[in-house]
Image 1 (tube, rainbow, N blue to C red):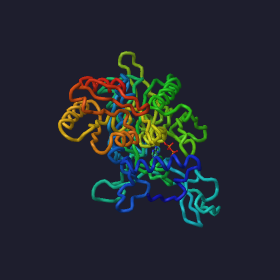
Image 2 (image 1 turned 30 degrees about the vertical axis):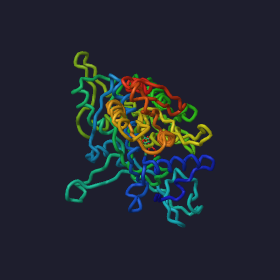
Image 3 (image 1 turned 90 degrees about the vertical axis):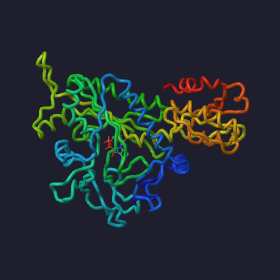
Image 4 (image 1 turned 120 degrees about the vertical axis):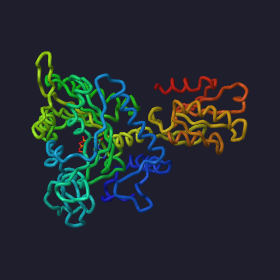
Length: 446
Ligand code: ATP
């Protein structure tokens, strides 16, 4: 895979084994490929293969389920990726969404000054240029003219879509703070040093909530969202001891933030951000009100109350979260004296929730197995595998995290039952075909 910085993917020894094992598994089993690999890839850009596409969708769905479906105070939107430049002028991104860039005069590598300690991580030279601001937004031109009047930007965050649509959403959905607008979608940042596989890429997927609250309640909601978001990762199987909160120091806060707490995960190379929870105050709504001339306020017609809500923002990366879920799930153990690789993914995150495995690929077993498959497919994402020995098929499913295998044997033809085999314990239970779907749903917890 091509990386601009040869050192960017270096991880401390000890944990390097885990990192390599997950990256290799991701490639070998069709989770994540280098993008356009037949042309040698393109710098730190990845394509999600069949299993990666399924798992990434599950990460999104898990977020959607908690942040939208299970709440009566959050509504979703999908805003455009190519955005009117005024949005980025008002938000401050044109001026301040910058990282400090330094060049090494010796080997000509480029680095983010705040990520290195005075010397070039590639060649060790201390002969670095002065840091200069580098804007991370991808610039493009809309329409056939590539002059300044046609300039637009790919969004570096989805959040601004929620702010510019604040009034539209509040009025059409008849909302009153506290309420939130959620959005899932791609974000683009021209990162100086992408790397560590999909941890930092230039194109990535974000999961963001902008939660609008009465100003006096902002601190309480900030604390609430920090706890909720930590619980989300724990509930999906990340061990608590590999997670921590990190509060940003006052001098490190983004231009819009009054307080920011990151949820960090202990990656193989050290602690890294999974999600940032920010108190954005009324910064964005006020900035857009000022530039657009449209008052972005809450107004209560009965009481005459009028104010600009404050905003609490939990902002997470779906692709980065997927990487953490894969790292946390990776395990190797021994079953019956044989080594196996197993992804102990939460059942809702696994690419397949079940694999249907007939002991023979011949009729009449194949027809019965397909009947079972079709039953399960209505409710669950299923794989179907009728090749090689059953033991090897179990191993293949373990390696990609499939929590349940449904085995159809010759007895199934007469007793109308199948065996459900569980990934972690390898325990087996006989279940009537008529109950397979509800049994699996119960165990997955839909
Ligand atoms: P950093 O300081 O590491 O560049 P940030 O603080 O700018 O990151 P946020 O703006 O808080 O990041 O982004 C919100 C979330 O989006 C992050 O917690 C992360 O999960 C995800 N994210 C941000 N940048 C990237 C990227 N380049 N690749 C993948 N995910 C990213």
